[in-house]
Image 1 (cartoon, protein in one colour):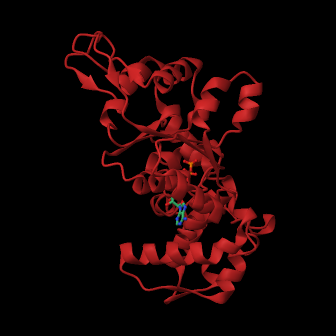
Image 2 (cartoon, rainbow, N blue to C red):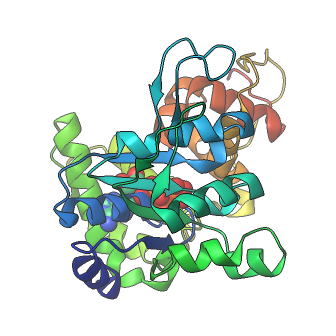
Length: 318
Ligand SMILES: Nc1ncnc2c1ncn2[C@@H]1O[C@H](COP(=O)(O)OP(=O)(O)OP(=O)(O)O)[C@@H](O)[C@H]1O
């Protein structure tokens, strides 16, 4: 991590693109913010979730459009490149983009120029590009899913964030910082007991810092006093309940699954980042209240409803 922060310090003041690589939850978004903050650029940081952009809207989202450019374009609109002028454009989930998206991006990265859809004026792209992905782009290139020329343009300065399981020594400090932030936001005053830290050090955290964050916040909610101890964590073994410790679901009584609408794909993907065990654990911790469990996991009511249905969990009243 020190290598990564040192690279940020060196590269931030330049105009070079930065490519941040790392598993989900390793802090890529936070590092993108860090690059922007340390860049000294006075424009804004504008984030684009590339995977969530519908194919038909890519061009107008990135480059904007003129009035009357297409049906429904009743007024001119600036795209993300213009909105980020003088600042940083953060292209998140770059590994999930279509060939059409990649071609359009490559052109603006090569020429530094673009036109709004339906426009004739050529505009200069005054942005610093930061891109991030949890995909293995080398494998994607080999599979023909990612353009090698775009990769070389973006990866002038690659920044790889290691998974948390490979840097367990960072866990105590991260956990304390997460707890302090949580207390500041919620007016509490907690400390982490040594047994809690020992427990956290045994965890694998496949969801990386995001999962550690959820575990610590959940334990803070469940702690009986100011000290968050190992017993405040609902898990006992490597942050995963052992098979025998899965909450027993008593028979009978009416189901209480929220019958919300199906969430969109991006929303569903977020919901399923929470594993079945983690979902069960949160539900048990929350006394089988869907709303409370959703808060613990950082999901919306629709997302938790979707995950519950998808994993085939039947909730019953005690
Ligand atoms: N160094 C850190 N200290 C405290 N919290 C952190 C740190 N790094 C990341 N986090 C927290 O972990 C969570 C995940 O971070 P972030 O969204 O930046 O990860 P990501 O790699 O971009 O994830 P994804 O690929 O899923 O978008 C966030 O809530 C963030 O605030």
